[in-house]
Structures are given as C-alpha cells and as structure tokens.
Amino acid sequence: MAAELERDPFRYHHWQLPDETEGYKNHTGDQRRIGTVVVTASRVPRRLGIDYAVHVKRGEKLGLTLARLPMRDFDPADQRLRLPDAVRTLHELLCDGHRVYVHCTAGINRSSLVVLAYFIFVESQSEDIAMATIQLRRPEAAPYWDALHACHQDLLEQHQDALRERAEDLSRQSLYPDAHSVRLQAERAIIR
Image (cartoon, rainbow, N blue to C red; front, side, top):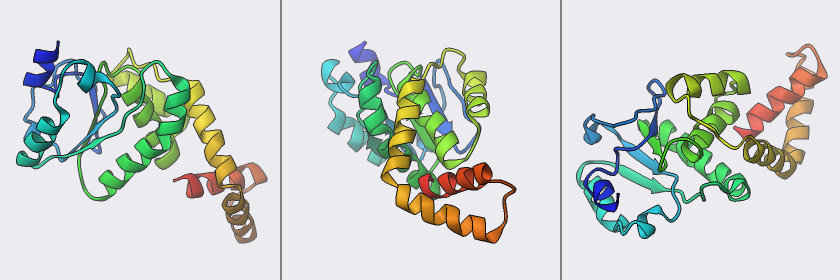
C-alpha cells in the first residue's frame, strides 16, 4: 500500500469543494486542476513510509497548496479538538478562491466529518441536508456525530459573550420571529 500511495497519493476517497461535493473511489482526474489539498490523516504517511516533504515539493511544482491537518482516525475526542482548525482552514482556502480536495485514508470518517462540519458551521446547512449531500456521493460516510456535537458545544462555550452580544443586536433589529431563531442566527454568525 505504501508504494501505491507514493505513486498516487490522490487515489483514495476525498471531497472536492466548492464544486459539487464528490467522493470518488478512484481519482483519475488531473491533480493540477486542484488548487489545494487538505489532508486529514495523522500517522499514515510515517507509518506507510511516505516522505511527506517529497509530496509537498511535488505539489508545489504542480501549483498545489498542501495543508496537512492531523486528526486521529477512530478517535472522536481528538477529532473534536482538531475539527475547528480543519474547518477554519477549509473555509480560508475556499475564501481565497481555491478548489479544495479534502481527503483521509478511506473517506469514511475524518474527511466526511470535516466537510459535514463545514456545511453545518459555515454554510448553515441543517444536519440532515448536509449529511444527505455527503451520503449522496459517499454512502459509506460515517462521521462521528458525537465529535461534531461536542465541538459545536465547545465553540458555543468559547464564544458565549460574543453570542450574547450578537443575539441582543439581532433581537433589537426584530429580523427574526422568535428567540430560538435569533439564537440560531447569532450562532451561525459567530461560529462561521
């Protein structure tokens, strides 16, 4: 498997944004079309004998920006802690005009979690719509919901003063029909 990854590190499952979200079983497209790669793998390169520095240099030659965001597989606690940085990085890259290729080893857990959190936290999609979008392209996707929900709770606690101020501003503007709607809009504005 190490030799296979060395030859084509982009072969495995991924998510490509802002274009249609897609999970491919085999990536056969031209890697040069992809502006940025976000890697959500932790020990995989080292464990498989992959020289990550070589891939960074290869990516630079192809005009790619590689952002490696380690996140342990099968570890909801680690994913909870690392998810905000992954979503923030994805959002910044998209705002800078990159087309972003998000991948992990199998495309089932970590990459789908990052894309799911992006859809919910940044794009303000409902959980149902975000997950349906992901599973439409990758039925096997199985992000850790407890990591997502705990991360969301962490963000709310971390930004509670800003949330309160934003909710008060929105309430004074009378743009939303009830307190729940005001709170949701405040959360979306602050967490985004």
